[in-house]
Image 1 (tube, chains in turn cyan, green):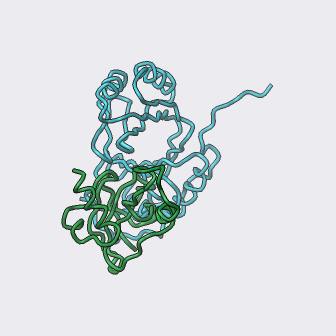
Image 2 (cartoon, rainbow over the protein chains, first blue to last red):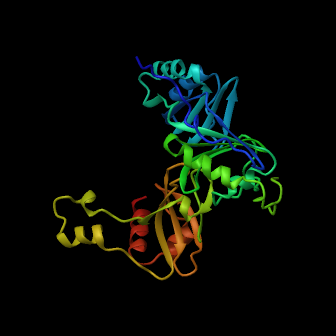
Image 3 (spheres, chains in turn green, orange):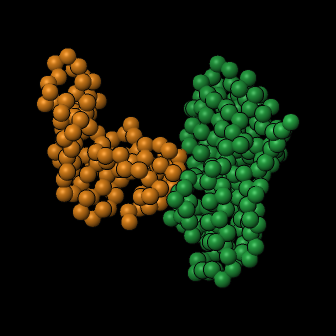
Length: 197
Length: 114
């Protein structure tokens, strides 16, 4: 009998070799989509009771507590990342705590693929696919935004100065991976951008 | 290329990160008087758009960012944005004063209502 087996979106992709920044998939991460009003005190209190961290209210920021990280996506939407094994329990706990409050918490762990870029020049590599200026001081570590990347919708998370996570929808994972593999291949360095301030 | 700034999440990007949503501050006559509305009024509401040379008030959506709608005032000659403001808001007073055509009437009626 066949058994269902978990496989990460990029399990069968070609490894990134010969690139000037390192590329790898982050497969084992759980994600929860949380929606509700930032102006609703009950909603904020319930979310904090479960997550133990305040939802970030400043645009394009994130908040971290232990292994939980909360991304601001819009004034009424957050993405919570956590270890994959915890995602289901956490989303159920959120739904229970938020009962009676106009809101939504859904486990979307299988919805997106995460690609991590690491090394000197990651900002430049990402800028090959988007119109945003990542060398600008608007993008310090911890900043998060959604963007148009290589013509597809993607979520950008600046983890550290030289570490960037890109979240894309699962069906685009292979395309995004191939785009980045080519954008980062050795010999294609641009090196004209100033270092991020 | 025109550079748009979203007043909701503050991101700045070229127009491919955004989606143009047509003329702003269009009044729907059926909202105030659904019974006595004429065919001409309904036609104007649905299809007739103002197309000025100069100051233009329009709607945009932060399509690939926070997903929210907002307003912008733009000069159609220079493509310069004069202001970005919230979807429930009116433009800055000095732009309201410069407004012509249907917008001038609209801003005046809003000012009176206040």
